[in-house]
Image (tube, rainbow, N blue to C red; front, top):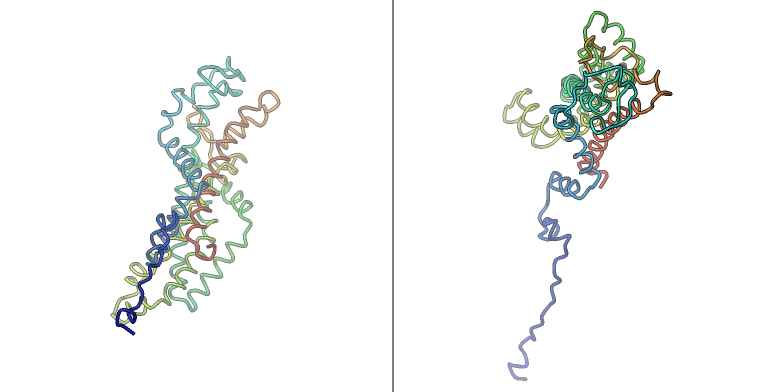
Length: 319
């Protein structure tokens, strides 16, 4: 048999072209591992609910910061001769029982609601971080005591405790904003605290924490540099959802007359105040009740949907 007959015959193997999914997700095509953050961002980019919620949330924040961009009318300009007047070119939803522009008051009402929401998130976030990180990191009797405190606060009826506490603290205050912020902050930190504690317990058992401890790092450095950054992702998700809940709680307390208090010149504008004031006149005109209620519902829903979308993207168990 000749040498030419002994040589192997070269065969060509057809390599399939990369798919669109592999091009968009390079980690799949190249075989390189991808981080949880890159996976989450890919899912968020292709999630229409996330984009709708994000646009609505940003719209509400911009409306609260710059209400004059959405309406040129003065929400405190109220004239009784325009009481329950219908829509026109100047007031697209007409006027309420005091002759105030309904749309202008709904736009300017976002400011107090968003302000109370973010301040409440700052209060409850601070409490949740302090208790959750301390209990989860040190464990032992400290974790046992802090867990029992968390369970006690969690067992208190939220709305009932908010009504009692707000009514007791709102006496003598001009607007009641700080009362609502305090009530929401001290009663709604439990969920965020439990999430932080769980994340800290998981992170402190990792190898990099043990290595940092062997190298002589102190407790403060380990918590701030190694554990806390890994616990922030679920914490931020919970705060996003809690923001919508805080806004709805503020409107509820204000509607019941123990939240934001109206001022004599009408400069204090809140969705809860407008909804409360429109209820006795709902048979005469339902628009003053419907419009701020829709603004409130869309705002709360947008923040809750945003938090849910981020949670679904960053939770590996839901993949």
